[in-house]
Length: 505
Image (tube, rainbow, N blue to C red; front, side, top):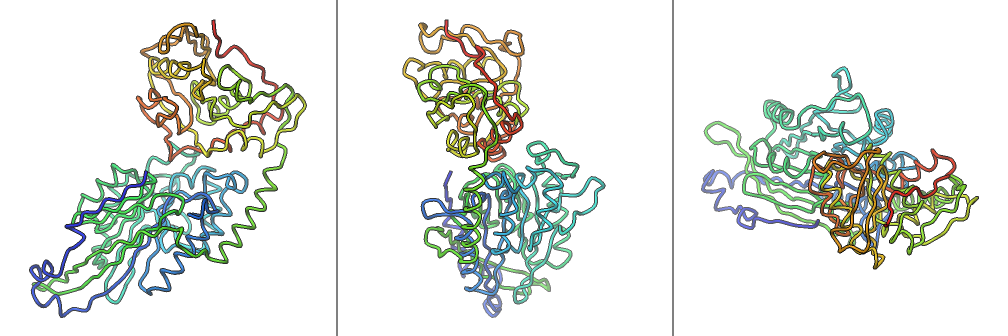
């Protein structure tokens, strides 16, 4: 989603308003200019179609630092995973690239913990930038190494207080860990109170939080500026009281906010007035940083070598032919659905045949490489997990089988269930029976269903998957291709034949 919301009335908080509030004395004060720069949710090291990636991000950061000495660069999290390269080095290349761009404030997102606690701490140890997460502690309640709760930055007498807040739901949607995540709002209230007591004139919260909490924070009166991540939106909002910004995803756009601020004394109290100016920068217009670009090219070369590594052998013919995956159960479809179910811990899994793209028959005895899996799953989809009723599962299957005669991409490849259908019946009335774990599906019961983010968002007509509770959403899941690679490597040998999971009468 790309949406920029501007409240023009409030972004033109003009001199007349300041004069009315503070009188002429306000204009005798010196104006201090400073800039806050935000990036969030950037996973892919290289650019795509001339936009995004770490080299262009580093170029923008360098340009902003050259433009003014009063600059703070924020990263609102989600970067160590998921990407193809992170599947091999667990995000080490990302830290090396961020050490070039060097944020002043980095707040960990939920994907920083995809490889577990030990890997997260290892990556933090390699980072040459500070980690802010006031609501994150180790299992004993102690602060983690190289972490801090808050800081105050002084720009020509303007004291900018900064607090970082991680996503409390991380423990539910990322790898198992013993870390403690405190509630976001309670922690933020305590941190902003402490910052004010320590002399902060202006409060900035950098958070990795979903949009509903973003609005709660922005409207709470606790902060002047909220810099956030997690939803992948490009958002700029200002209501005259608080600024809220998110910079999309993949470094495609980087948002800079220029502030004009003044400090005056009114009734014996120190008061700061400020006005924001927003500059969303299209990274396509940026000059890539040469150091970061060299690192990207080196890792892309390593990635190419990694993709040609053999990860398993198939003991049977493995079928991903387009005509097959869009009209009938195939063992490649079964394999991918099994991998989704294993990755998400679902009761059952459904994936769309149209997402399987290599159009290939691998003869028995073939060696399967990582590149083969990436060729099969090229779209960059993430794993997803929803909790829906049995009736919704039937509705999803009806959608998947509704155009089987036309070999549409929605045909369901499944795991954990057996589906019988009658293609002679009209679309929407074709499912004859569904069994799960050997028992008839209960339309009133609730099941955990693994899938991919495209389908959970309603792709290929799978709106039924979005009717229940989303347990792992599009911004929380892991890269599907990586999860299939992990799964087949664990198998070592694929000896999977079709099992009558989807059968036509």
